[in-house]
Image 1 (tube, each protein chain N blue to C red):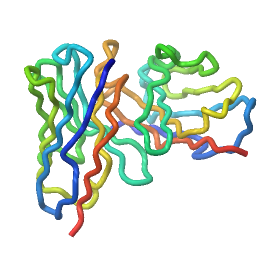
Image 2 (image 1 turned 180 degrees about the horizontal axis):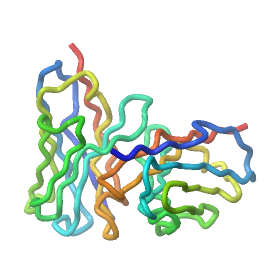
Image 3 (image 1 turned 90 degrees about the horizontal axis):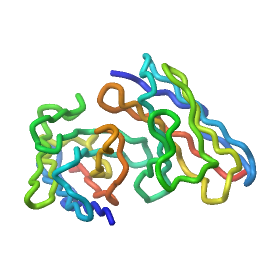
Image 4 (image 1 turned 45 degrees about the horizontal axis):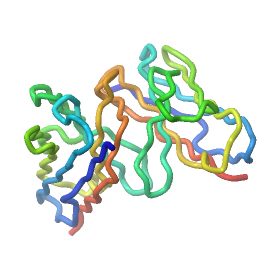
Length: 120
Length: 106
């Protein structure tokens, strides 16, 4: 069965960095677009970034452009999000999600999420 | 960026009720609209995509309609497991979610 397991969240000071990972299993990882979506405490969902199956196409939300970097290692079935220059408003649960075959940004499987807290 | 506005923000309903949630896009998005259900402490679950196509395994009491800028999610006969927050999402241009509609027990 499809599984996505995020890790790497934690408490970081403003201006700091953190790298999130997402381990995928149960499907051919290299065939699918992948995304990061976040949810601030008590708030709604915000798409952060996506990466194509090969890694050649990448897009970011304006709110993280220039600070976050998405990447993937198809040999390791893993997705990553490098987060730099973190701000308080980046505090959220970060989910990795698989893009559907029908559309890259329709998300049919999600991980359980990892909490990132940016605070001094 | 395309903005998605859901209404209402919350509603109270009883088991067996018919519930309708609306979603409006700030510009036309054809049928590039999905709906998700999220329960507290859990990841969202895909219910519907392409405005009206039911995701595999989703009960038929869920249905979606609309195109262009106005969309609806209908739950025909509310069950206890349906009390949750529902989000619409446009994928016409990247991705934007609505603010959510919380369905609570009356």
